[in-house]
Image (cartoon, rainbow, N blue to C red; front, side):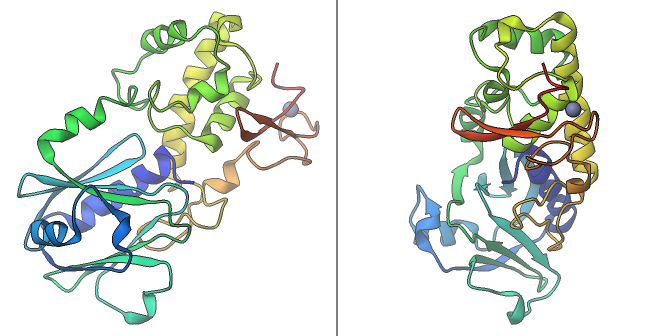
Length: 276
Ligand SMILES: [Zn+2]
């Protein structure tokens, strides 16, 4: 599932590709994908609009238009955004749900194999409201160790891994990177926040600041086969994954067998020897 590094990869690629393009027309194959607005109104507002900028908040992708509206896309489990410099019918498949056509002949495909993703069109000045539901952005410089400790202090009885995935608490981290961060910090995903030492808090913080940018550098992870970047290429971070989905295999650090358990309903892999 796309998390911060995957959505950030898409954002960076689309920023370069879509800036100043004008939407010529849009084809919507699954109308219920568009939420909170009628298809008629949606089309009326986006056709003819120009792309001002592409942004990301948490796992949301935001495309600001020059008409004071913003397109908001959540890829959920398996959404894909694929850019084509010119239209080609053989690139359309049964999972293609929206096709944006630009006036220069380029195209953006929105594929949604598992049908959980959504698109909204909201007034740009409403975004502050929407954004306020999320916790801090972990890659912003304002997110420092002191702020991280402050966040931890608010949730002393939570387990560390589920809380890392709580979007209201901290934005962008999901099941894969939460496991990788716990492994990096040598902390068991079950640990209660109030049991963490100063050193462990610092290591978790460092894990967040190290792993997320590294994953962006490798254009994210494609462990579930669905995630691809805007050029339809899988991410290369798979090769760097230490624990996620590695149950039964040897720990790269100590050689013990990686275990998998359910934690707050989510499959969670960890090394029982390295992570205490
Ligand atoms: Zn180990």
